[in-house]
Length: 639
Ligand SMILES: Cc1cc2nc3c(=O)[nH]c(=O)nc-3n(C[C@H](O)[C@H](O)[C@H](O)COP(=O)(O)OP(=O)(O)OC[C@H]3O[C@@H](n4cnc5c(N)ncnc54)[C@H](O)[C@@H]3O)c2cc1C
Ligand SMILES: *[C@@H]1O[C@H](CO)[C@@H](O)[C@H](O)[C@H]1NC(C)=O
View: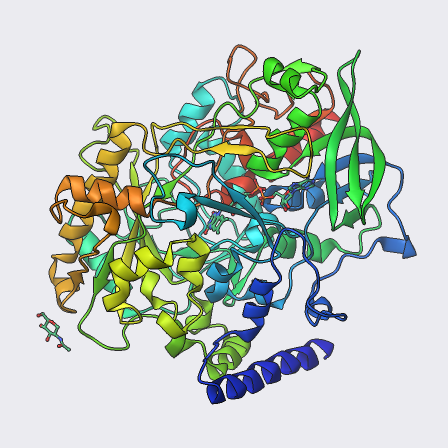
């Protein structure tokens, strides 16, 4: 009931704001999100006393009227992200152990549940506003030529602000990870954990042996589709890619997007795993608490607790059994290094006493894309568009049924895996994922709209207008090619020894020529795709983007596409491998195949940072799987 009153309040606010804004001729489709966007990270301060969002937030009060967390727990989990939430839920299943979960962000609110506005959270209080270090020759069309690397800061982590695309990777990819000495990580073995979390409700896949049905994380198709997605699947079939369940091991192909949603609403890890267990007296969740250091006994090299800051006060809490870092691929390596675990010389240069010399942060892979392939169509109203779709009636219908455009995960409708001519003909490992979007960068409202998507990517306004101004706010379709297995490898370092500084992140994007060639091959594939009858039915044409950075280069030459890719180089936010997993003999490994930090007792890392190499995935589902598996490994150790 309270919820209904709150929603009514929100909707009334939206309606009144809309009326007001119409009068002033500045239509703002989502005034509330706009307010959120203004409450800029990193230091959120309410816009005015009695921040209206507070009472719409989820909350995790300590049980039994406790005012403060205890001074000691069996397990301390650092970070309530995709992996940390499931780990906390599984470990606290045993009522005889105590679990503390520390998270710098806030609980989710009503808005984070709305899939269509996923792109709107990238510059809000729910994100860490990280930037990649400047790299010449990439992100040339981004503001200040910097690539933006936002990550989630919330109870729910990056899974609270992501696009909800659910993917698992190919069997060969997991099997080669296992073959490198990572026992327990073969496809068969990880499949068990994928299925454990999953509550699949996917029409047509009711009998699939690869899908889980008894878990807590709902996986569903999106109940809203534009006709353009049918064209994508049909065109794929014409070019030899069958329509499949891409999360089944059998075949490469295309398929409707599967998302971690329930009835058109986001199901983050917090929602799936923490919410139902709020009342457990042995699970203590503390938001707005930032861990600054893992406490490690120098002599015995044993982790025994953490230091954290809450309300500007420094606190200490000890762990009887283990500390587990689930702070994600940027903060987990940062915390290790701040605590004396990392490259020796690097730590010494900041005066950090070295406890264990390990290659923390030395490897960093990411998935990049070129989001600028925008195709115009000759049918009005066929694609998604903020101005047309962001209205109160749609929001009300979505609240009730969850089956309209508001349920679309930022416009993503299908994905497909392909092998370009540059991939290895000997294997069945794709080198490109295509993401079919029933909209594009120009669908976020145009000059008078929110511009949330282009702003979320931090594309320079001038370059955007020169390249896309003439088609802004018109109907369009778009395909994002994601480079699955980049040869270019990045790394990460501390900036200084202050835990509130952000590390220095180096993507080293496109430093290997094969990466450039593969992306160009994927653009050629996209061109072939839209030349097929299913797309030509809509008179589809690739918009000729005129980038000032590419002046003088012949349009549609390989050189032009390389320039375009280097101009709007965008990440899909799958940074991994900064706390790489590998056996002791592996000189690049930070954690062992049981996720224990090499050389340190009672300390594990359980999040996407342990992935040793790229997999054909968006990394949320793997992070959840890693959390599941970590829970079993830990339970086994202490049983
Ligand atoms: C915009 C965007 C869209 C994406 N879309 C998709 C998608 O559609 N599908 C998909 O599969 N993946 C997607 N991803 C990637 C995916 O969401 C992440 O890879 C995944 O959530 C990572 O999980 P994690 O558990 O490793 O880390 P996270 O979920 O990032 O969790 C880390 C947590 O640790 C907390 N933390 C940080 N520092 C500290 C500290 N000092 N002390 C305590 N806690 C700390 C953070 O606040 C955070 O809550 C997207 C990512 C972004 C940014
Ligand atoms: C769109 O273009 C195609 C191909 O030229 C044509 O067959 C179709 O009739 C056009 N549709 C409209 C609505 O103009």
